[in-house]
Amino acid sequence: MTTGRTADPEIRAEAERQHQLIMRGTSYGDDATRAVMSRELRTRLIESLSIGDPLRVYLGVDPTSPDLHIGHCVTLRKLRLFQQLGHQAILLIGDFTGLVGDPSDKSSARPMQTAETLERNARTYREQAYKLLDPERTEIRRNSEWLAGMSFADVIQLAANFTVQQFAERDTFARRLDAQQPVYVHEFMYGLMQGYDALALDADVQLGGTDQTFNIGCGRTLQERNGHAPQIAVLTPILIGTDGAQRMSKSTGNYIGIDEPPDAQYAKAMSIPDRAIPEFLIHGTNLDATDADRLIAELNDGALAPMDAKRRLARAIVAEWHSEPHANAAEVEWTRIHSRGEAPSDIPPLELDFAGAESITAPLAIIIADAGAAPSRAEAKRLLRQGAVQLNGQPAAEQPVALREGDTLKIGKRIWLRIARRP
Image 1 (tube, one colour):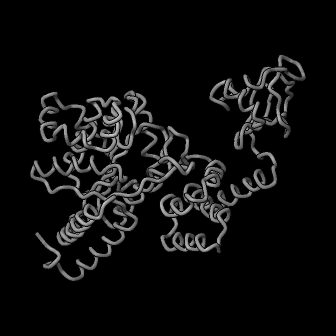
Image 2 (tube, rainbow, N blue to C red):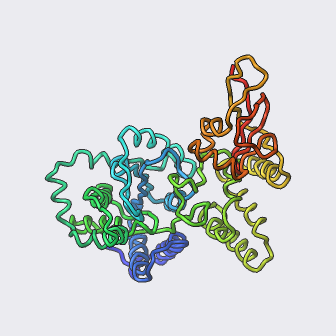
């Protein structure tokens, strides 16, 4: 084994360069864990470069929703970095772990997904991930390859490597147990399955958010007990959502999807609270670290107004996932709507059956709810009572109104509909 002391000086220098790039922006929660992972990473890089054997680096994603959002891309960018440094990038689609769902940072059991839903979502994940990763240099795997064929005896043998106390002491489970909330046995299985993923992939490094410390530790345990060098955890912060309160998630609606239209991405970025701007600049964009640090410094000393900082942020997000011209157009559109109070140029049509008449009289609550612009008719009525619905630029009444072709509805701050005649 080549160590840092015996390695060629050029190899040590290159290993140190890679080490600094990889560790930048990581977050471990405690200094002791960071020190151990940093030391192991440096040693493994030297060994890899000395023998010309790239590290096997993987990121696992459970396809529990059809879209990746920019929160997923914090770790995806790390995977791309390893790829650019010449290491083997592995994107693991958790089509089997997704059946259970990761209990990390969850206050209750996650709903179990169907295999059909996971398969449908998995097909889109690879296409979206290739917006960051090089398709020709990315190894795509699914953990159903090894987990689906395990026998019950295999599961018992796997479980024998861990104690109930280890799982019960996890923050997410401990809080629920203290509150006398149920913790289901199948939730314990998630850490076992993810641990076995690392063993099956013969992984040198696993990427994940800070909530993955326990799961990655399961992998280290199984690897060591099976004669493998334990994988190294490279952990990154979890990006906050556009609400500035909860982690970014499709289920809470506080996300910016990488496949969303430019106007939607720009508008969502402009909606984040001022206090969340620095975190989004660092972890939610592909801005160079120097540029992000400079913008944050200007924001902190008052040289850059929060609104202008958000414009820079929004443009960076749209430009990354679409293009600079798309970012410029989205900014013009957002300014036209929000600064000048004008309607969007491409309001989606809401087709109604006029039955040959010039107008149709209907309760707006029903129209709004049936169009999906409010989750229920009761919620639509609440919006109407609060004055959050406009018809042709004027506050709309709760009682039935006459609608004509070409009328515009604005529901809340973002949703616009144009009344159209059903063919």
